[in-house]
Image (cartoon, rainbow, N blue to C red):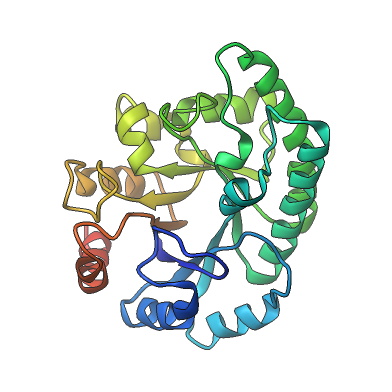
Length: 271
């Protein structure tokens, strides 16, 4: 298993201890903390030099775990369902750009809330539109050798695909189970939506291609009630060898995140 943490390249995010201006400092911290890579928050590619970013990672012996893409939803309204065809096409184009960048960086691409929020009165149509929007993205990713990560997100943020098992069902039965689509299993969302972690991992473990680390209250591990040791033992036993990336708030404090990440990762590696 490999470990990474978030750093943002264009707009600040609550999921990183570092501001946009400090992203290289964030990479230095990841290297010093014994992490294997960085999760890069990228909204768009205007004036973004992807090979230069790859250079900064390489010189620190860091990989890139995934591209976090969700900022464009709030900033530009990009979305794959519950919107006009024009918005879907613009969103697809952005994902093609993410996939191109991921091919250079050797990373995956996250698809979170940009799938859409869903609506109780139009759930079937939203799901159908998402399917039609994602099929070309899956094909493009397949051609580029990139994995797109569909993330289960809890019911308080979207009504569309909340649990790990729901996402697994959508990938298999709606999308035809393409190799280019995997699951991003976020432990904060799972705490709300997955009835039993062992049951979920037993069913979807082969499709989990990325994990987000956060405690039950989105805090740093150990400051909520999730039994992290038990969860990671499940992942180890399932043969998970991909990245697990910190997506927690700077809670209980930024200093705790910065100072305790290295020792926490060493502990999990030693399970």
